Length: 263
Image (tube, rainbow, N blue to C red; front, side, top):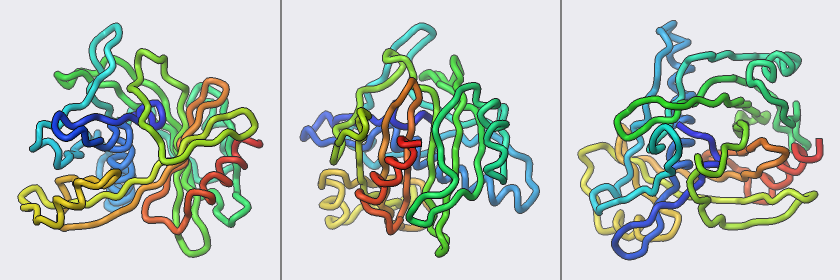
């Protein structure tokens, strides 16, 4: 899987000029799914293992094409999160140890003014994969989970900003603004998850034809989710504040991002 803003890209359908979901967002959603799988495996005391991206967009059936970045060593066609160097921390007091594991410094908060507070954090590796499934690069990523009193969750993903030639073109955000000299981008996308053998209805096709609405195969049943995130880069570090099916709106995420930037 990937680094999030560095990978917020938009691929284009060959037909209709329709914008598809970014590779970055697909990777991010998959990582959220993987996080759930990690928790389940821990509960069952199962062995941790790689979770290779299975996220498949319905657009594949319509000649879906994803642009890739070419650089020394091969062409980046995907990312996966492995267990190499995986560390979990339950206390915010362990932040210094977590930063030591990531290998770079970054800004964070223990509690946001809106009541979301630190729950846990992990440090792991993200592998760059070529079209043959070979790994030819790795970077570290810090992930923090924050929850409110109702159990709603927001995640913060942080990694060093990737070199320009290792990143995909950034998608056009829904909104963009400047905060203390830092450019923040906001995006919101609606997803419909369906089983692999699901046959799209005319209504489904109409949904998929709308901007920022996507259909993805691979779930056990039909599900709908909304993903919102704010991303930015500061001092060579990339930040992605990400919420799934959350009561948090755009302004809420901007305010939370501002608290991180202001630290």
